[in-house]
Length: 88
Image 1 (spheres, rainbow, N blue to C red):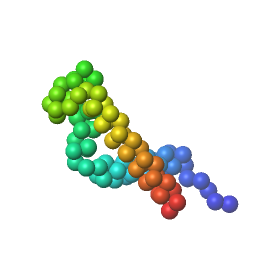
Image 2 (cartoon, helix red, strand yellow):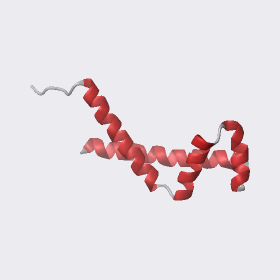
Image 3 (tube, helix red, strand yellow):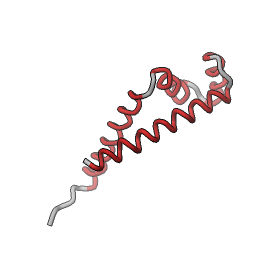
């Protein structure tokens, strides 16, 4: 009978897999998309997003749509990466 690893080890291993996939997927984005995500989520609070949109020369709505599309790309990449890793 095989022993299961302790829950902490399992959680740490799962988190390490997620982090590896996350980094891989971020590196796979075009630099412009990575920069936008960093500025959208870490550099600009919601009231400042209007300023961010003006700085990059797009409407606030287009900024939101762009962020949504990039998030969708990241989500799909993460799901695929985690699926492939679980098959290993």
